[in-house]
Length: 165
Image 1 (cartoon, rainbow, N blue to C red):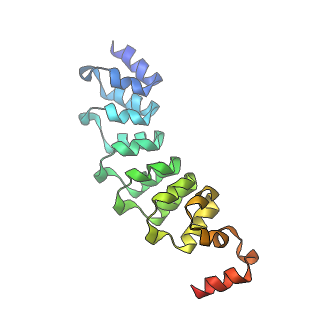
Image 2: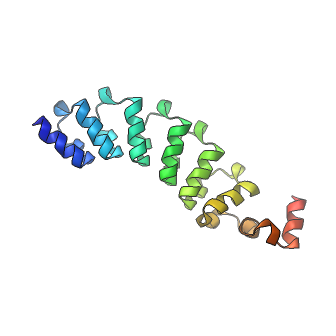
Image 3: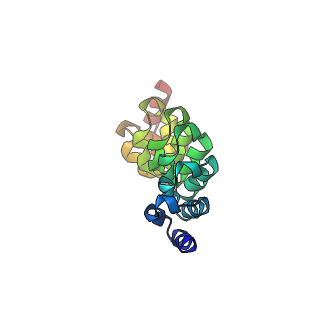
Protein backbone atom coordinates (compact mmCIF):
# COMPACT_ATOMS: atom_id res chain seq x y z
CA UNK A 1 0.00 0.00 0.00
CA UNK A 2 2.81 2.43 0.90
CA UNK A 3 4.49 1.95 -2.50
CA UNK A 4 1.18 2.59 -4.26
CA UNK A 5 0.61 5.82 -2.30
CA UNK A 6 4.19 6.93 -2.87
CA UNK A 7 3.75 6.42 -6.61
CA UNK A 8 0.54 8.51 -6.56
CA UNK A 9 2.10 11.48 -4.75
CA UNK A 10 5.10 11.38 -7.09
CA UNK A 11 2.65 11.85 -9.96
CA UNK A 12 0.55 14.46 -8.19
CA UNK A 13 1.73 16.04 -4.96
CA UNK A 14 -1.81 17.18 -4.15
CA UNK A 15 -2.72 13.51 -3.68
CA UNK A 16 -1.03 13.76 -0.26
CA UNK A 17 -4.16 15.53 0.96
CA UNK A 18 -6.10 12.27 0.56
CA UNK A 19 -3.56 9.96 2.19
CA UNK A 20 -4.71 9.13 5.73
CA UNK A 21 -2.49 10.82 8.33
CA UNK A 22 -1.31 7.51 9.79
CA UNK A 23 -0.04 6.39 6.35
CA UNK A 24 1.95 9.53 5.52
CA UNK A 25 5.67 8.87 5.67
CA UNK A 26 8.52 11.34 5.51
CA UNK A 27 9.60 9.95 2.13
CA UNK A 28 6.05 10.32 0.81
CA UNK A 29 5.83 13.92 2.02
CA UNK A 30 9.16 14.85 0.45
CA UNK A 31 8.07 13.31 -2.86
CA UNK A 32 4.77 15.18 -2.75
CA UNK A 33 6.44 18.55 -2.07
CA UNK A 34 9.05 17.97 -4.78
CA UNK A 35 6.23 17.38 -7.26
CA UNK A 36 4.04 20.25 -6.02
CA UNK A 37 5.34 22.74 -3.47
CA UNK A 38 1.83 23.52 -2.31
CA UNK A 39 1.56 20.00 -0.90
CA UNK A 40 3.54 21.35 2.08
CA UNK A 41 0.13 22.30 3.46
CA UNK A 42 -0.65 18.59 3.98
CA UNK A 43 2.70 17.53 5.47
CA UNK A 44 2.47 16.56 9.14
CA UNK A 45 4.28 18.94 11.48
CA UNK A 46 6.89 16.35 12.46
CA UNK A 47 8.13 16.16 8.83
CA UNK A 48 8.22 19.91 8.17
CA UNK A 49 11.81 21.15 8.14
CA UNK A 50 13.46 24.33 6.98
CA UNK A 51 14.90 22.37 4.06
CA UNK A 52 11.48 21.01 3.06
CA UNK A 53 9.98 24.50 3.18
CA UNK A 54 12.79 25.67 0.89
CA UNK A 55 12.08 22.84 -1.56
CA UNK A 56 8.39 23.76 -1.48
CA UNK A 57 9.01 27.44 -2.25
CA UNK A 58 11.54 26.66 -4.97
CA UNK A 59 9.00 24.36 -6.60
CA UNK A 60 6.11 26.83 -6.22
CA UNK A 61 6.52 30.36 -4.87
CA UNK A 62 2.97 30.31 -3.49
CA UNK A 63 4.14 27.77 -0.90
CA UNK A 64 5.59 30.78 0.95
CA UNK A 65 2.12 31.18 2.44
CA UNK A 66 2.69 28.01 4.50
CA UNK A 67 6.19 28.84 5.74
CA UNK A 68 6.23 30.09 9.34
CA UNK A 69 7.42 33.71 9.48
CA UNK A 70 10.37 32.79 11.71
CA UNK A 71 11.70 30.53 8.91
CA UNK A 72 11.28 33.07 6.13
CA UNK A 73 14.53 34.62 4.97
CA UNK A 74 15.14 37.41 2.52
CA UNK A 75 16.56 34.89 0.04
CA UNK A 76 13.57 32.55 0.36
CA UNK A 77 11.14 35.44 -0.10
CA UNK A 78 13.11 36.75 -3.06
CA UNK A 79 12.96 33.32 -4.68
CA UNK A 80 9.18 33.27 -4.17
CA UNK A 81 8.45 36.74 -5.59
CA UNK A 82 10.71 36.08 -8.57
CA UNK A 83 8.34 33.26 -9.48
CA UNK A 84 5.17 35.25 -8.88
CA UNK A 85 5.15 38.84 -7.68
CA UNK A 86 1.72 38.39 -6.13
CA UNK A 87 3.20 36.34 -3.26
CA UNK A 88 4.53 39.64 -1.92
CA UNK A 89 1.52 39.48 0.39
CA UNK A 90 3.17 36.60 2.30
CA UNK A 91 6.51 38.34 2.82
CA UNK A 92 6.86 39.64 6.40
CA UNK A 93 7.17 43.43 6.66
CA UNK A 94 10.70 43.22 8.10
CA UNK A 95 11.87 41.39 4.95
CA UNK A 96 10.22 43.69 2.42
CA UNK A 97 13.24 45.46 0.99
CA UNK A 98 13.54 47.55 -2.14
CA UNK A 99 15.12 44.51 -3.82
CA UNK A 100 12.11 42.32 -2.89
CA UNK A 101 9.65 44.94 -4.13
CA UNK A 102 11.53 45.46 -7.38
CA UNK A 103 11.74 41.69 -8.01
CA UNK A 104 8.00 41.38 -7.38
CA UNK A 105 7.22 44.18 -9.84
CA UNK A 106 9.64 42.73 -12.38
CA UNK A 107 7.78 39.44 -12.29
CA UNK A 108 4.31 41.00 -12.14
CA UNK A 109 3.88 44.71 -12.84
CA UNK A 110 0.68 44.84 -10.85
CA UNK A 111 2.66 44.11 -7.67
CA UNK A 112 3.52 47.85 -7.66
CA UNK A 113 0.07 48.37 -6.21
CA UNK A 114 1.32 46.79 -2.96
CA UNK A 115 4.52 48.83 -2.64
CA UNK A 116 4.19 51.39 0.18
CA UNK A 117 3.89 54.99 -1.00
CA UNK A 118 7.01 56.06 0.92
CA UNK A 119 9.12 53.76 -1.29
CA UNK A 120 7.61 55.03 -4.53
CA UNK A 121 10.27 57.59 -5.30
CA UNK A 122 10.61 58.83 -8.84
CA UNK A 123 13.76 56.76 -9.30
CA UNK A 124 12.18 53.60 -7.87
CA UNK A 125 9.15 54.03 -10.13
CA UNK A 126 11.43 54.53 -13.12
CA UNK A 127 13.31 51.33 -12.20
CA UNK A 128 10.00 49.48 -11.86
CA UNK A 129 8.85 50.70 -15.26
CA UNK A 130 12.15 49.69 -16.85
CA UNK A 131 11.85 46.10 -15.58
CA UNK A 132 8.12 45.73 -16.30
CA UNK A 133 6.15 48.43 -18.07
CA UNK A 134 2.85 46.79 -17.03
CA UNK A 135 3.22 48.69 -13.74
CA UNK A 136 2.48 52.01 -15.49
CA UNK A 137 -1.15 51.70 -14.34
CA UNK A 138 0.04 52.18 -10.73
CA UNK A 139 2.36 55.10 -11.41
CA UNK A 140 0.84 58.57 -10.89
CA UNK A 141 -0.04 60.12 -14.23
CA UNK A 142 2.09 63.19 -13.59
CA UNK A 143 5.17 60.90 -13.55
CA UNK A 144 4.40 58.94 -16.74
CA UNK A 145 6.66 61.09 -18.93
CA UNK A 146 9.47 60.90 -16.37
CA UNK A 147 9.42 57.10 -16.16
CA UNK A 148 8.74 56.33 -19.83
CA UNK A 149 11.20 58.62 -21.58
CA UNK A 150 14.93 57.90 -21.79
CA UNK A 151 16.89 60.69 -20.08
CA UNK A 152 18.31 62.04 -23.36
CA UNK A 153 14.84 62.28 -24.94
CA UNK A 154 12.88 63.94 -22.16
CA UNK A 155 11.47 67.40 -22.81
CA UNK A 156 13.08 70.52 -21.38
CA UNK A 157 9.98 71.01 -19.22
CA UNK A 158 10.38 67.52 -17.72
CA UNK A 159 14.06 68.16 -17.02
CA UNK A 160 13.21 71.51 -15.38
CA UNK A 161 10.61 69.71 -13.26
CA UNK A 162 13.25 67.15 -12.21
CA UNK A 163 15.58 69.93 -11.16
CA UNK A 164 12.83 71.65 -9.18
CA UNK A 165 12.15 68.46 -7.15
